[in-house]
Length: 247
Image (cartoon, rainbow, N blue to C red; front, side, top):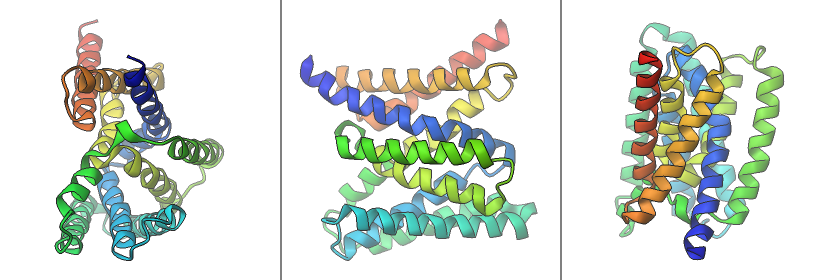
């Protein structure tokens, strides 16, 4: 039991850190109608990690983070340009950006004998194996991003929003993987879309319960943690929607 707690507690804390930024960003994503933006930015950030691996820089984590963040910021600039100049078909262009980035990642890894394992890690993540160093670094970044968001969100332009969004996703992709990044952004926001009062509280409840139940299910039933959390969070979101509709 102690061994399970030693693994589950850091993973749960990682989930809470992800939710801290992804719930407010997810609500803004729904409001702006750019649902695929998180997938596109996450995949572009992942490209930076792939490039760092190809350059044999995995032993220099700060440099890997810099490359991933620079890639994500380039993606943010691209998405801001798309939203400004192709507003009528922006979702199509953003979705295409995700597909192109994902395809380029596969091409870059095509000669890597461990490509399948790396791709799985990027998609599903390794939340059960987050380190204390990752948690501390992510906590500091989360605090900085939330401080900027809470003080400047009314004055952020398109690029300002996407830049903060990109930096948050860069950190979370390496903690929990692309699938959980998307779920953490969209499921709580979508489940509370029609809730006016205490929306953030309900959204955090959906996300927190989803991470807790998913992690427990992964241990009890020997399931992949990332996929289990995605499903647990979705079921929690559906339950809240049903209760609010019938209540």
